[in-house]
Length: 456
Image (cartoon, rainbow, N blue to C red; front, side):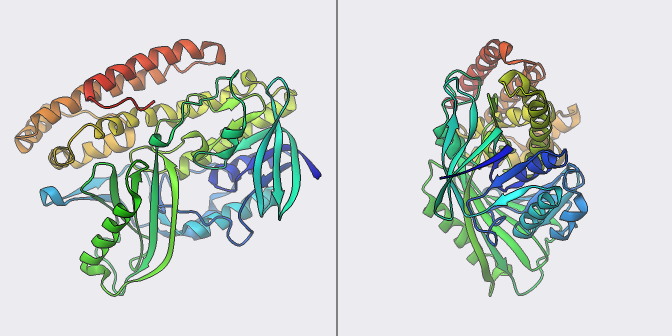
C-alpha cells in the first residue's frame, strides 16, 4: 500500500472542495483533492443549474474563470406555478441570478484549483478514515484505480457530498460534530437537460411548479432559450418513480416541450435541513452538502458551498501553521458559516417543518394569496414583514385559508426567534451544549405550533 503525504487532504472535487483546496494552495501548502470520478466525468453533478449570488464568489478561483459556464445571465425572477389555484406568481429574487452549465462550471472550478497548485487524484474511492487513539483524524484510506493508498495529512476536509461516507466511518463521539443526521432530512433530486425546438417565452425566469404532494416540486430553469434544465426534488420518504413520472407527465403536457430531445439525465441527494450545528472535529472539517450548506427551501447551494470552502480553507491554513488542529482552533470556521448564511438557513428550515404538517392544497392557497415580494423574502431571507395595507389585501385574497395563515404567522414568529438565537452562536465549543439546549427548546415549540413530527 502506498502512502501519500500532504498538509491537507480534501475529499471531493465539488464547489466546496475546490474552493477550500484552492484557498489552501494559494497560501503555499500542499493539498490534494481525492475524487471518485475519472478526469473526464469529474464536475458532472446533478444540479438545477440556477445560481443565486452570481455576482459574489470567493477570489481563490477568479470569477472570470467561471463566467464562460454562465449560459443565461438574463434571468431576473422566479415564476411559481400553482395549478391548484390556477395561479402564476411572478416572484422577484434578490441578488444577481444566472443559469449555468453545471458540468462546464465543474470543469472550470477544477481548472482554477489546479492553477492554484492543487493536486487531483481521480478514480479514487475512499473507504475509510484514519484516526489516532485520541480521535484526531489524520487521513483517508482509499483505492486509486484499484490500488490501495493511504492519504496522510494534518487536516482532512470532507467535501464528499450529502450523507458522506467519511462521517459514517469517523468516530465523533467525544466531539461537537453534528451527528444528528438521518435520511428524512435529505431529498433526492432528478433532472434532465432538454433541448426544445423553439425558444421558450419564459427564458428570463426560474420556473417552479408544485406537485400534488407537499414533499415535492418541479422546476424548469432555462440554460438558454432552447436548453432547459427540467427536474424535481422530493423528500427521501417519497416514492421516487411516482414523482419522476409526475415530471415526465408535466413535460408531456407542456406545449413548449413538444418535439423536445433529452440530452442528459442525472440524479443526486441533497440536504433539506439546517446546517450542521458543528462541522468540525479534531483534524476534520465538513463543507458544502457534507455539512448541510444548502438553502433548505430552494435547494440552492453553490454560493454557500464556495464560501464554506473559503472559510474552511482559511482556517485550515491557520491550524496547520499553528500546529494545532483541535476543535477549538478550527471553531472559527463554524462561526463564520453561521454568521454568513447558516443562521438564515436554519430559519428557513422552519418553513420546511411547517410544510410537512399543512395540507398541500391549503399551503398552495396561502402561497397564492401572498404578495410576490414577500414570498421572495420568506424563501431567501428566512423572515418577512408586511405593512397594514398589504396584510389587509392578503387577508381579503386568502379568505378560506385564515386558519393556515394563523399557523403561518405563529410559525414565522418562532422562525424569527430562532434566527435571533443563531446570532448568539457560541464562539467556542465549550459553550455549545447550553446554546444547543436553548435552540432545541425553540424547536420544541415549533413542532408544537405546527403539529409536525420532530425533524431532529
